[in-house]
Amino acid sequence: MKHLLKSVKILIYSVLLVTACALTVFAHDRIDHKQYKYHWNHNVGQYARIAVRKNVTGLTSAEKTAFVKAIKTLKTTIPAGSKLSIYDQFVAIHIGATRLIHNHKGHSNGSVQELAHENAAFFPWHREYIRRFEQALQAVDPTVTLPYWDWTDPKALDVIFNDDFLGSNGQGVTIKIPNQGSFTGGSVKSGAFAAANGWVMNPVLNIDQDTGTSLGTSLVRFLQAPPASDYPVPKKDVERALSLNNYSLFRPALEGFISVDEQGKVTPGGFLHNYIHGFVGGVQIDASTRPVKFKGLGTMSNIPSSPYDPVFWLNHANADRLWAEWQENGHQGSDFYPANGQAYGHNLKDLMWPWDGGMSTPKATALGDLLSLLPNFDSKDLVRPIDVLNHRKLGYTYETRER
Image 1 (cartoon, helix red, strand yellow):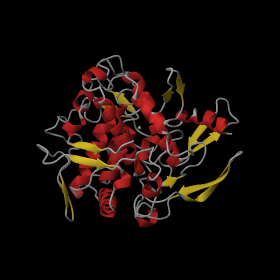
Image 2: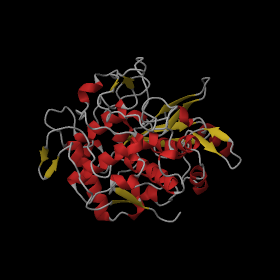
Image 3: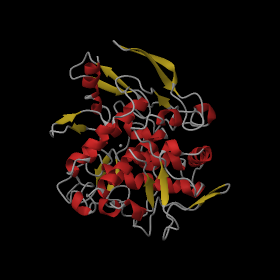
Image 4: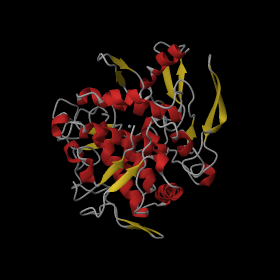
């Protein structure tokens, strides 16, 4: 049976296809929300202190409460002239990065391009993206930083999926998995991220990536349903990815599209970062078709709108932490990132949407014009992979515990 589960996991990847001195976020006017004030195009200047991202299992009760409160403040704050809350704007940006059309000479063929996933810029794009989200949280509460989920830590599940933090598994739906039994999931019913407690997702943004139909307004989880059921992630799997010297192997290994064994054999599958998306959201398999078809069951396994599950930020903070560890272990600087040969937006000095001065435009979704839901971006807010290679220059670091 374990052999069968391993074989099935190898196919999960089919569905799990998302300046030290001045950082800008989105160009909006200053907005007020009680004591909350934030200017999207602010200049943070020299950092008064380096933000330290902690292992989620090391958070105090007060730190967990502050993190949740800051997230929910962003979810209820709608900037003047916007149709969306600040949190929803971050979700819209993640969706936009999966469906770009380049408008500039040499790269304008009308085809939809993926920027945030499946290629070299996965790490730099998400580094910039989650850092800007962290800055938005810090505008609510300067003490808040993004915690990371060490996938090898067996204690993490009880901390994360608890009503005093990010809420429990979903309820109300039972699925039967052949040879495995029945498993429960569905909408999250308790904790701060239940619909009854105000966590209501925009149905125009929360869309099925395959059919274009809305997935509704509730956060959905099928936590630890097979085939993505094993936890914790073996330490040796992480260490093996960190041992890879070539970025062209390291990136897909840590993103989770391949594993590489001690002999260098590459196996496609759903691993590490990708595996956690499926572990939280759940993955359904239709083995009656050829090729076998996969379907994400919950919010985290619907990749474009997966930031609607706040677990997203912890998963990506850990992926960024491990990239930073890899960089500091002999892979620092631009020599360890592809200068060319990648799709546009992924090369070392390519501009990355949405920080590209308007060089690319997201394609409209089946449910409407995504452009009308995005914030305005400052044309001078330009970011390339080369600009984010040193995380400390972006004003943060990690409290990494011994593994």
